Each structure stands twice: as C-alpha cells, then as structure tokens.
Length: 391
Image (tube, rainbow, N blue to C red; front, side, top):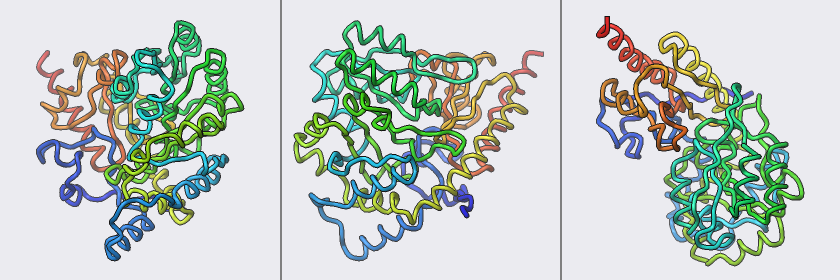
C-alpha cells in the first residue's frame, strides 16, 4: 500500500544549491523551475551512496542495465515493452531531441510544435537546424487537444517533423491513444517524423491513461522516436541521463549511427540513479508521490477558487505543473513579473511558452501543502490590495 510522500521543510530546502533554491533571494518562494521538493526514493539514495563509497565515479560503461530497466518499467507502468536494443542513452531529453532531429530533417526544414509548450522546444528546433512551425493546442473548453487539422496543413506545407510533448508541459494534458494514432498516420502520409518527449509520463495520475507514442500502432512505430528519462518523476535532472528509443528498423539504425560521444555524455550517477528509479523497488515510492501530487493539484484548485476567483485552472492529468490563466484579473500579459516583484513568489513566465501564454503563469506544485498555501495567500494579497486601492 503506497503512502504519500512528504515534502521537505522550507528550512531543509533552503540548504539545497540547485537552480530552484539559488536563483532568487530567500524571501522569494520558488515555484518556477521543474524541480520537486521531496526526498529521493530510497533505492536511489542507496545506489548513489554505494557509488560514492566505492568510488564508482568513472565514465559510464558502454553496456549498462539502463535500457532493460526502462523496458521493464514501461511494461509495468504503461503496458508497453520497448526493445532495449532500440535504445541509446545521452545526457538529457533536450540533447536527445536535438541529436535525433539533426538526423531526420535537413537545415531549414519545418518542425511542428504545439504551444503553449515547454519554452526550450523552440530553441532545440533552432539548434537542430530546423524552423519551428507553431500549431497551437486546441482548447475544447474542457481541456486541450492536438489540432490535427492544423498539423495536417503544416505537413502539407512542407514541415518534416513533429516535436510532441506527451504528457504536455505546461498543461498536463495526456494525449489520447486515438489522437496519437491519427498523428502517426498523418506523419506517415507526409513522410514526416515524430519525436515524442515523454519525460513526464511516469507522473500520469491513475485517473488518466498514458499512451507511449511508439505503442500507438504500426504507423507510430514506423515514424516515431521517444525520448524518456527518470529525471522529472524522481528529481534527477542534475545527474544527466536520458534514453532515446526507436521501434522501427530505420529508427534503430539512426540511433546506432549516432557518434559514441552522444552516449558518453550520459552521467555515471545519472545512469545508476535511473536504474534504481526504474526498478520495482521504487514503484511504491512513485505511487506515493502520485498520491501527494493528486492531493496538491486538488488543494491548488480549492485555494484558487476561494482566494483568487477569476483565475482559470484545469487540474493536470500528469505532472506537477499548473497552467493558470490570470487574464481576467487585468495583471497584464506577464503576470508573473508582478507576482515576483510584489508577492515574492517566483512562477514561470507564461509568454515564454508562446503567444498563447499571454496572461498565464506556470506554478510548480511539487512541494508541500504549506508552501502552496502560503504562495497563493501572498498572490491573493495583491488582488486584495489592488481592490482596496481602486475603491
């Protein structure tokens, strides 16, 4: 029986030296970058402690248990077992995306992205030599969906790849199996490639169902790559480890032909930590984390409804990132700036996710209920002060 994972205290978190806790002064509550505030899963702590004790700090080996560990994890969690022979590791998901795109597009080719989307996607396409082609998500009134008609039009106009975010950051959307199959069929029709960033997949809530892109049918296997990592679910970003996954013979050929240095960028500690994260021993911890995040996403909804009426927020189906629309409060195109300056709460700037992010913020609720509550109270005080100043 899983037990909810408890976040560290604010005093303990202030001892950390990572980006989240060093970017701003101590009076600021940092809820911007995608780091979480929980202790590591015990199996990961044990693996890293053993490596330090043994001095196991050299180069990552050419043969590791990482691919087999992920294949078994994906089978347990998603009902899909990818072939370990079709995987290669690298430092992180962003690097994996760039290395794959470089080999499936020509310089100047269009690469479809679906804003509002993780801001580095635009830069990664540029780095790979492509040109971002924006096809925004469709807001149905109840959630977000891929705009398949818009994607078809972009492919017909010459785009050669789709950079998919599944689950989607920042909305927390888990794309349906039906939409992924349709996307794959469009890519096959136009001879395009889909590269699916699935870094948030382990954080899909039990009331949703994550479909790995490469499991979405024969067309998906033929046109697709996935890039995966334990880094978001298990808070391992600083250890540098991700996997590039191909299902078709052609995709696996692409991965095999990558320079050996791409794989050697994998961190030794990252590999050891990821193997421990993907092991069955960490499943109960991950289930407990999902319980905590479920409670936090619901707490945030309640707090916003009571203290910040007029904001719009849909609970994400995956992850620990909340996409909140402040437009009706009249706080401008980038409300995070005012919130940081006057409430001392750091949120991710909405416009960084594309033009569709105007008036929005992204809030990281992968923390304690106390910090979430304090953050909303600080932001709500701005609204109260504004109302009083206009009376």
